[in-house]
Amino acid sequence: MESSFNTFVYGDSYLPQSVTSLPPYTRRPSPQLRARREMTEHIAELSSDITNKRAKPWATLRVYSKAPAGTLPSFVEGEKITGSVTLDAGMSHSRHISCVKIIVRGELSTGVLEVDRITFLEESTTLWSKDAHATRQDGMHWPFSIHLPREVSTSSDIPSSPTFMERNTRACIRYNLIVHISRSKFREDNNLQMAWIYIPASRPDPPSQLRQLAYQENSPLLGPEADLKGWYTLPSAKVHGTLFKNRVIEVTLKLSLAQPLSYTRGSVIPLSLTLSSTDSQALDLLSSHRALAVRLRRKVTSNRAQNLAEFNAPWNATQGAVSTEPIIDIAGAVWWQRPGSTSSNETGINSTTLSKVILYKELEGEILLSKSLKPTFHISHFGIEYFIVVLPFDTTGFVPSTSAQKIYNGPIIEQRVEIMTMFPKGPRPISHSPPEYQGQSTNTRSLNPSRASPGGR
Image (cartoon, rainbow, N blue to C red; front, top):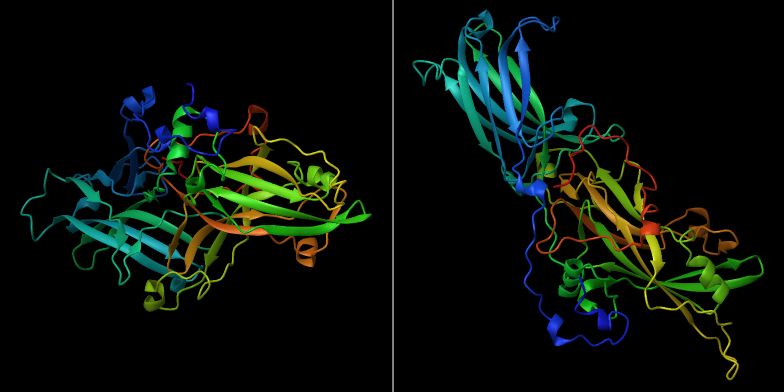
């Protein structure tokens, strides 16, 4: 489809009046979206002999979700958990029952001790009780439907957080659905439980109208100078170092991120980078994709809440919580020269004035986001944050002169961003990287295998 603003993508900086508002947009559902997704039945059972896998179950919990078969049931914020509980009336374990309850429970654990575990969500629904029902409804079969709350009922109304369980991370958030079967005095109660995945519904605000139009028409993105509302430009950073052991050089970096600074997993983070220097050789060397190291970085922050008051306290990443988990660079950016821009091959000296000429390289880039990324969240003293970081140049022939960059490899630029689970309203973001670059946008350091990592929605 021809773009209605191709005429000024590379040229005039003024914006025609026709693009100040978007044309009508209608998303055409794919055939897969038109067909209603089949519900999967997830089953948990209790048998009279736990050592015998063939023993007949006397209690069965069935739950229905849109998760694939063979995985844990998963539910998005706002959905209902539906299912049923069935007891076999002919078996001895089904006798002397006084009450049957279904419990939704969410727990935060920051360690291995009991004091490290806090239940932040617990909702109980009575399916049957001996006192309230003269006879058992439908024999011993009880359907249920439970609406998931959007917030945890505490003094600070903490938003419900996603399931988080990773092998190499001490803290975890888990959700369970528990059938509690109470019996008369001096008889043992029983619990039948099933773990499930919770996915909060977080959605970024829509991008600028010009970026929406580019997504709708599959056109190149306008840069920061043409689309002022579409980019967030960070303060410039200067890098000093020695090139080929014979001269000191200075390069200035100006990084811009697509605005707003919230991005949906399974989509992309558009980037724009301008490098400037009076040394053309340094500019060519340090603007290569092998030298540039721009990453999406994840930080897990956790600390044990000493009491309920601390648990309910507002999140503060700098007080009361420390990063105890390894920092992981999730994915790296790919770069290509901005269409319409030219690479400078000047010597860097103005022959008339003998003054140094500042040369520029303008690059476009993006970071591809995995569908399995955990969204940004925080609850009590535990949370996940994401940052875009620019690391020191890594290329043969260049040695940074700043000790922090030379020894500790600390970031030159760092900006906090948010990862969310739902697409913004309007056209969906699309990748603009050239085909020859798309294979390079791979994880620089993959996440450790997750025990509960639902895909994006």
